[in-house]
Amino acid sequence: MRQLIGFTPANMGIFRLAFSHKSSSSEKGYAVQNNERLEYLGDAVLGTIVAEYLFKKYPNSDEGFLTKMRSKIVKRKSLNQIGDKMGLDMLLNEYNQTRLSRSMLGNAVEALVGAVYLEKGYVGTKRFVVNKILRNYVDVHELETVDDNYKSQLLEWCQKNGQTVSYKLLARYKFEKRDRFKVAVMVNGQKVATADDFNKKSAEQMASEKAMQSMGILESEA
Amino acid sequence: MRQLIGFTPANMGIFRLAFSHKSSSSEKGYAVQNNERLEYLGDAVLGTIVAEYLFKKYPNSDEGFLTKMRSKIVKRKSLNQIGDKMGLDMLLNEYNQTRLSRSMLGNAVEALVGAVYLEKGYVGTKRFVVNKILRNYVDVHELETVDDNYKSQLLEWCQKNGQTVSYKLLARYKFEKRDRFKVAVMVNGQKVATADDFNKKSAEQMASEKAMQSMGILESEA
Image (cartoon, rainbow over all chains, first blue to last red; front, side, top):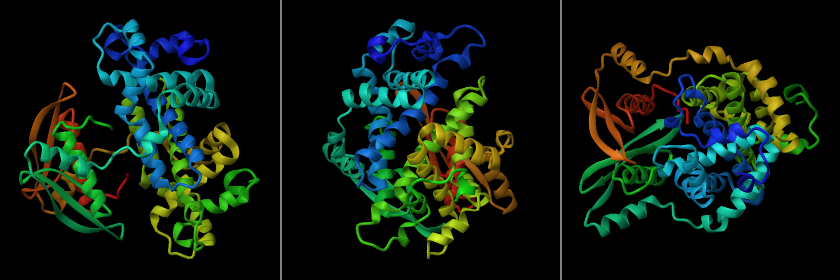
């Protein structure tokens, strides 16, 4: 544990808790003391630390770019990978009898950040996250160019698999005095997903992502 | 300003920026220096402070309750109300030539929190948010009982307006080894919105909320 977090915890219990999955806590009344509360806290703290890190790293980038970069780092799939690289599976195995699922790795990263926060506060946790997680396991520059163009990903998948894809504008309406678009993505002429946004292109992107999720070609990143 | 935030800013420029809407920044190259970057930062910081506040206030509540309470406090509609009660419209009018929209109030709350954070760091901002915002303008206990049952809200609206509402299970599939449900909400037999979730009831709630948004009966809360 010391190796993982860079300091010896004063309250070891809270760290043990971070790696204890709900299904492993058998005692009655113990339910709320599983790692889910720590995940909730760690999710928020991690999101803010990453937000600030990017805010300072990219002083000339706009909010759209920063938001996109942040979500690339803290999305489910990425946290699972980080947890994997950190070797959290070993700790999870130590504290749980259940079979590990991939999403438990990402949850454990969040819970760990929550536990560090309770012990070290914001500044100490920032140091931990930046030095032990971001610097070691996240290639921020590579992420700048990662493809999150779901429209082209879906098109590519459909072409490979002999399916057709098309988009349909279902509605255009006013919302908070702005134009808003509702589009559907159709695979083989069947509506697979819909999405609304203030511009058509972004609604199509969102619908494509949802379509890929519901078709099972994309890991959920919520 | 001193009255609003409880201290005299060392860097007044950053606070002026927090209330300057993009459309008001005329100089070229100044675009990224508008309040949107501060909103991005403030949104994250505020979310974490509220998350921690609730974590400590409700030591026996589970993560689902805490997440719900947090979203009730930081959702768009609630931030607009907070900005209104804080009287931020006066500051916005002072720094902008454009006509104010309701959403500018919530954005200004976020940007203000971002500005305080840059000046005071996490602990100082926590003090500001808890003492100056949460204690004054958020009735946490009232929020515990606020109705976010969109299904019953939609039903009620439809009954009042002579429309029928029904739900349709579109698909049941496996996702990450769990059952997942895709449901549609139909108004007068027409599909208005769909949503996916791991249980049917919650998918129906989500679909109802989306339906109310796209029908314009619910202010967007994203």
